[in-house]
Amino acid sequence: MPIRATTRGFSLVELLVVMAIIAALAALLLPALGNGKTEARRTQCVNQLQQWGKALGLYADENADATPRRGQGVRPLTQLDRPEDWFNALAPELSVQGFGSYASSAGTNGNSPPQLFVCPEAKAVPQRYFLTYAMNMYLSPWNQPEPHQFSAIPKPAMVVFLADGGVGYSSAFPAAAEYSPQARHGRMVNLAFVDGHAQGFKGDEIGCNTGTAKRSDVIWQFDTSLPAFAP
Image 1 (cartoon, rainbow, N blue to C red):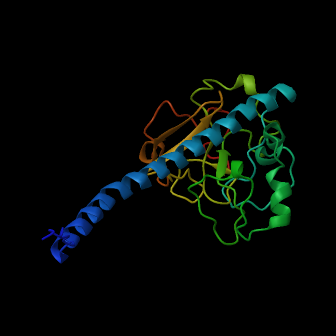
Image 2: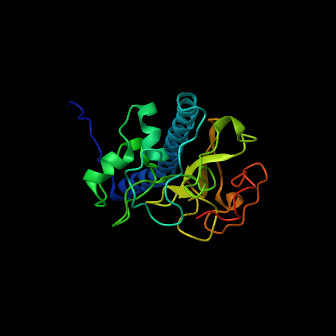
């Protein structure tokens, strides 16, 4: 008699074991995938800040060594039309329209502006313009008659130019306030410096939302002729 081959299906116990293995593998892999996306967004933010840093040098070359103005200080952005403010002045160097031109038509409804103006980890805030990079509050403030000269800024590799800032603020300084730099990247904050480079730092070392800065190689107030706080 011919012998028939018999096949045996998976038992319920075997299926449950396979499902448990798949679930365990997923639990191991998903955090790694999430961390990879987080790191990619942090790198994108650093690259965007570095582009703004390079634009600062180009602007100074074309404008008699002047730096752009920081925009408004300790209050959320409302004045959009000053061409000297960094978010308008530097935009042409990066082949995008000034933030003021965009925001005047988009309003504060949370629509996304050109990517260069926004950290990829930032979230829109109602009734705020969606700008999340902020210039050093002590660099070319409006209460100073003339903007700082680019070539006269001491230690350009240590003086902050632009930071991950509060949503809707055009300038930043470490403080226990909304206009402080923001550590959006796993407790890291990204900064661009006057020499054009950008990098990340631990937020607590920069004084994010506390004002207690711990690094002597990150300089905000470089001009002793300015008051201790320049709103």
